[in-house]
Length: 356
Ligand code: MRU
Image 1: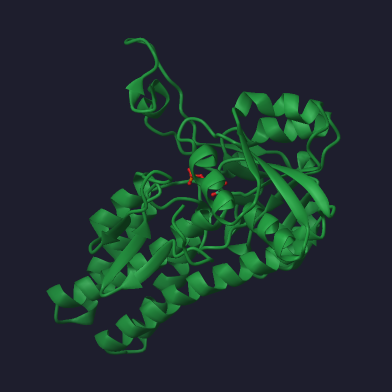
Image 2: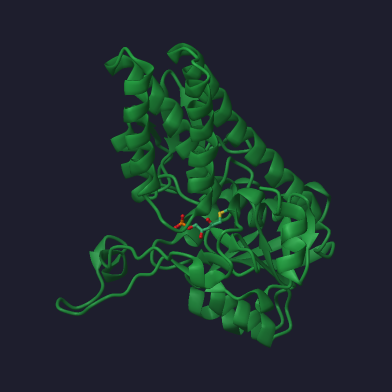
């Protein structure tokens, strides 16, 4: 097992390039994927080399810092730089539709460029400010995840078993994790936690990534097929289900990796608490409910193929929604950096995140 710094260096800035831990190759290989232009960054996001809502936001923030520097090398006038910058921003916005952290980061870092341009700042000054803002998005994400972890771990008994889905860990964020961050924080608090990780078909983020990072941090983890989760819950082996989210609507409906909604239904059936852990960058107050959330449909080939080979007969169709929406009434609590939020969510989420 490769020893890595923790929080993981999921997205970093180095020598005018964005450096990503390539999550398509883990756990077999740890490869650093360097993106020196916007096309290569967009490709890395679409291919899930960087994935997980907060990590996508962090990558997009650095993407805008990169975009401005590239524009400076092509143009002499800041207005012309801004034209290129806005085109890059649009290209980044079109990579993945569900993770609202992407749009949140583009708006936040983009607003810095717009404000400084309006103030008549120099191109160099804007370049410096954009990089500082992108780094702040990253640093604040790690801080929010740590705070979320401390609040969330209080929900877990000293010896407990947690079921999670997909990868809402360090790899999906600035390095610490949301749902898995709660588990890291519980361990840091002296609790003994063992984890069941759904494999997460079709791209196996649970089997490959969650299992890798928990094992890397010395936490016992057992991988199961997604379809085994109901039996696990029925057998009373789980104290809590904790997942992340890609977008939380104003009423608390939460979009997350496909397969999360059935977990919430089953947790309810077996009287197990179902928690969602997410920072404010995942909140979308403009979506009144989950019905407003755009769900990414990915290439059917991801379902047709398994472990590099074709699994379905030629000529059949495959349906590949990347996310589902868990209705708020199935969510026991939402773990945020401000504390644990309970129903009614419309009222209580507005109190903690309403100002954003
Ligand atoms: O398609 P992915 O791998 O980007 O999906 C990721 C998830 O669904 C995560 O659970 C979610 O982004 C929360 S990450 C802290």
